[in-house]
Length: 331
Image (cartoon, rainbow, N blue to C red; front, side, top):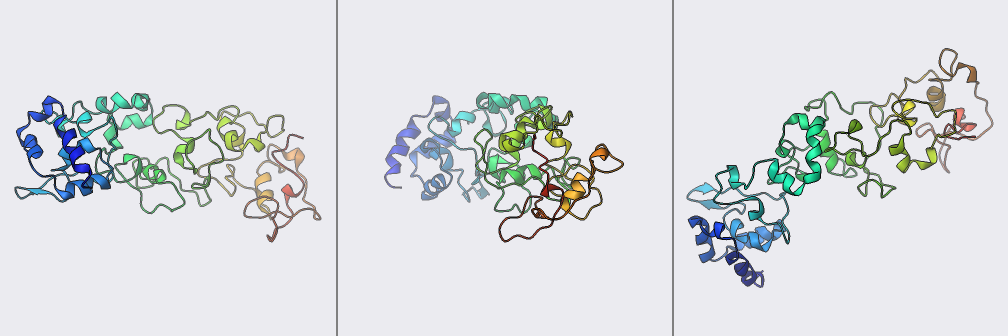
């Protein structure tokens, strides 16, 4: 830290003239920089040019008996080009000395995010700060809110989404509340075409868009989004390539609020096994595939009743529909 000090002082005196006009801030340049400032700057990975601001705005600092507001541990990062004075001007009359108001200030850098105001998240109000907190954030992605206990396997961004998409959140009409497992989160992302090393809400959804269900890739017609990861499940040419507005995959499966195991989107039929119940949703005497209803016979590979797939070594299972049939096969 001692080596940093001479560099810091050079950076301070190179501030724009507007900064030097503020009498209280100018006095900072004449005082020794508190060790607390240097420690705090290192903790939040601050730019060296931000030391002048942090000389007052470090955690726990008290001036004239009043604790000075600090920027917290989770804060907007600075770098080679971005500094405190990029967004703040100590001579500004705006709240928090901002050079521009929200969202215009944010959109100077994040121009591509302006489309959020056309979508459902734009209905919250034309302010980025409705969801994000530039300083003193509560979680990843500068979230203003955080959701209870998030599994260590799940990316932190899921807590951001679930803070609202919860029965007690403002998006209670769009919540995950099935008794069956939703699309898994936290597992390895098998593709580079969608963001994240692990599957999270934002792997499939872009919270700033206005398009179909905020999806990164459309599913209408050909289930293109699903096939990015599940390319071996392409139903093109199959009898199960059902024509729906939601896409072929969503005719039988849904990533959220399934009716049954394996993300099943239909009410399961009566049956002894997992696939009898799923296949029976259509393949029964009263539904769309009644002419293709055949009782299951024994003597072929066993099926794991938790996953719906053929058993692996050491697993137990029983005979059901998938013993003989592959519902995703085009043959």
